[in-house]
Picture 1 (tube, rainbow, N blue to C red):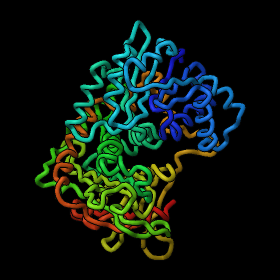
Picture 2 (cartoon, rainbow, N blue to C red):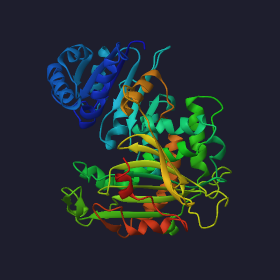
Picture 3 (cartoon, one colour):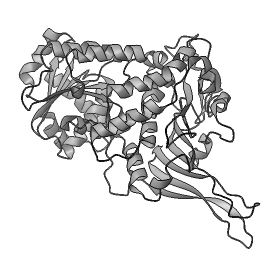
Picture 4 (cartoon, rainbow, N blue to C red):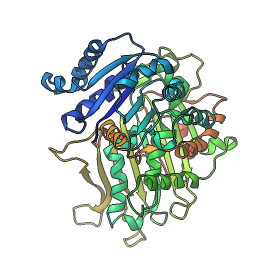
Length: 480
């Protein structure tokens, strides 16, 4: 990698402390960023020494095997500039930047447009010759389709789409990238990955946590915007895309957009048929009492924000016609668990009618551990022709293998100009088109209540096809 600069706007914030700096420190350890000049930028009236102390203390907290020798070498790559999100203030960066530079907006979402424009007004987005300038924007990309389009206009006032890297850290996860490799690289799966053989697909991201210290953000977001519009929709596209003719980031993103465009249009008038929302109330989570969402600090008592959301999505193309994709995510649920689960159709009856055949599921586990499980039917040992379900499990990583974090992967990709695991605006736009009708319908009324520590509202089964039911979160808790 040639010499370049990374400017982190919002360098004193939580994202920088918990995720960005630990990832950069690990990349430094691996020898992958020897020529990277890292500049922190924030409104805090710090000098470089104060910034270094802040980052030192953060790394000591979040890096389990942190040591001072490595810190000393890493700290030599760090610098700091204090300033506001005004063009005149940002021009102070110019003398510290290399010709090629990446700007990371580790800022509140309400400041994304202002920051992107101010950097451009300062003349820092201009590319000359073979040198490049890029900008990373964290989710959320707007709060609905209209605001997403407005953000695009603000950003594109000075930045070309090719310079904009919209980050969704789920796309940097090892298990997410493995989903595409596993389904395309194995002959046993590739021919059956279609509606003729697949019954349904369930994508779940369950959390036991509540809103914690994110009350202000979360109550304006809710589960649909926070998880389904971006993270889970991206997992859906990777599970459903057509094979790539060749590996190319733009072709990959083209194929993902094709999936989103093929999703059956939704309607706010019949939102109850395909969307469910819930809000947690008091209950027991991991043996501890959790309060009502509306009683959480910073949450209005009359809030109608959903802490659980579920969708049934229909993809109207030849591969997936008739196969429902179920997406759900929620807080204060029974278990911390994330998976993509694919159920295969039952085989034609080649066994006696009284012999039970368990459903075949291929499960990609994303959290808390990464791995793959194949649930199959085998003979039960004994003298009679009885069956039982068995699970063939494979961990994703083996002992001694280095597991790259999502932010490590994505930071390196952005520095190298690899956009495959970042979102183009058309992906963002089509994802908003899909969920906007539900958000419109949910402006009225209240979410269905569910007790903390359960699997979510009972009404989530309403969107399931006949014969389908959600995979149990309680069972997943005991399967690790």
